[in-house]
Image 1 (cartoon, rainbow over the protein chains, first blue to last red):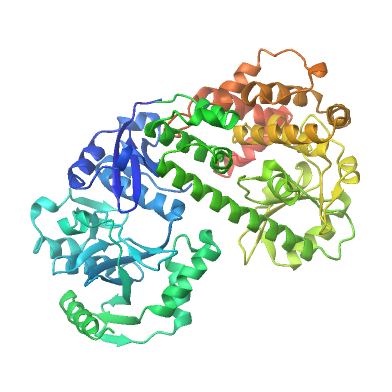
Image 2: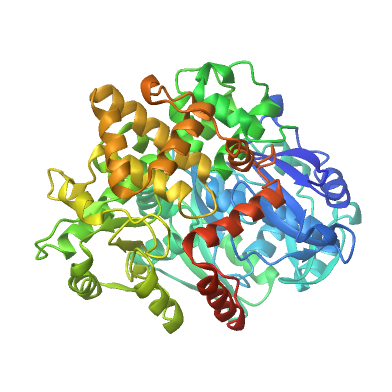
Length: 289
Length: 344
C-alpha cells in the first residue's frame, strides 16, 4: 500500500485525522488551520482518507478519492488541485454520517449577546455568504455548514471550519477580508468556483462556547425583500430534511428538534443583497424578546 | 502504523489488551473496527476497561447507534410479520435480526442492514404477493437480474419498502442453487424455533451453519471478521448451554453437506478468536487456513483494504463457488455487455 501523510485537526467538538497520499492538501490545511488548537491528547473521532482513485492516479493526472471511516459509495473523485476541497468534503461527510453527539442542522450560525442566529435553506439561499458577511460586522461566526443542536441543553455549538465561499461570494468577501485569510482559488469544481476563508480569530478562540438559539431564518436570495411567518409543522418538516442525522438519532433527535421548533422564533426572509439582509436581520434582532 | 487488523482481533478476544493503547493506536483501532462493521461489538466488549476520553465517546456513540439499529431491525421484522399475518407457513428470521430477536450475545452491538427471512420454496409466490401488497417494491427491475435470481439464487430479488426505505431478502434456502453444497432447507424450517411473536429462528446448529455457509461457501470473505465473530459468539453460547450441541452441530453439518466448511470455521474461529472447541472432534490445521487468515486481516490502520491480490483471489473464488464455469462465463458476458461491474 502507498505511504500516507497525516495531520490532526480539531473543529468545535469534533477531531479529525486527515490522511492523504499527497502532501499538498495537508500543507494547505495546516496553513489555513494554523490558529486552531490541536486535538487534546492527539485523540480523534474520525479518519478522512484522500487516496488515488487507482494506484497509478497517485502520479498520472492525480485524482483524489474521498474516503474514511464513513463514506458514500458514489462519491466522485476530484483532481489533486482541489485536494483541499476534498479534505473539507471528507470532514463534512464524517460529521453528516457519523456524528451523534448533537442534532446536525445543515445551516449557518452566528452569535451576538450570547444568542445564536441560525440560517438554513437550500444551497444558493445565501446562508453561507450571510454568515461570512455578518462575521465581519460584529457577530461571532459559529459555522457555515452545520449548526450543532445539543440533545440535552437545546444550545447550539459552533462548528467553525473554514468558510467555503462559492462563485460571486468570493469577490464580495475579498472586498472586506484580508487576502492572507484566503485559501487557494479552485475553479470549476463540482460546486463551481470555490475559495476557503479562515474565520475571524474570535470564532476560533471561542469554538467551544455554545449559545442559546434566538432566531431561525430561512433566507432566500433573489426575491423582493419580504419577511413571512412560517407554521411550526412546516418548519419541523423542513428541519428534518435539513438534518443529516435526524433519523439516525431516533427519539433523542425528535425530542431535541420539537423543543427547538417550539422555542425558537422563525421567519422566512427574501432579499436581493447582503446589505438588505443585514438591515432586516438587525431590525429583527432588536425586536427579539 | 498497523499493517493488518490484528489490533481489532486482539481487542475482541482479550478486552484487557486495549488498556495500554495510546491515542494513535486507538485511532487506528477505531478505523479498522468501523471498516469491518465491528465497532458496536468492540464498544460493548471494552465497556468496563480504561479507555481514553475521546475514544470512549466514539464507542458510546457506537453503542447508541446499534441500540437504535436493533430496535429498527425488530420493528422491521414485525412489519413483515404483520404483512404476512395470513400466511400459515413458518417465517424464520435470519442473521442479525435473528440474533437480536432471540436475545443472543451475537446480537449485542451488531450492525444490521437488511431484513432476511426464510420461507418454504413452494410458498414464495404467496409471500411475494403479500409483501408487494403491503408496500414493498422491486429494487432491480432488470429482467436479466430478475430471471437470474429466480432461477439460480437462494432468495427472491431484493425488495425495498417504499415508505420505510428498508430492504427485505426473502430466502428459501441458505446457499445459491448453483453452489456445491445443497443444504436441506426443509429440515431447517422443520426444526426452527418459535419465538413469542410467532416468528421463528433457526435451531442452534442450523443458525451456526447458516453463518458458516454464508462465510465460506458463498461470497468473497468481505466482512469476514464480523461473520467469524458471530460464529465465535454463537458457538460459545450454544456449547455452554447444551452439552450435546457439538454432536448436533456435526450431525446437522452432514445433513446440509457443510462438513468441510464447518471444520474450516472451527479452526479459524479458534485461531483468531480463541473459541473453545470440543477437543474430541478437533482436527488438524490446513495449509490453506493461512491464506484465509491473510485475507481476513487485510485491513491497515487507516482502515484501508490491503493485499489486493489476495482479495482478488477470493473474489474470483466466490464466483467459482457459485457457478459452474460455462455459466459463469455466460453471466459475466451478459453483465459486461450491460456495461456494469458484475455484482452477482
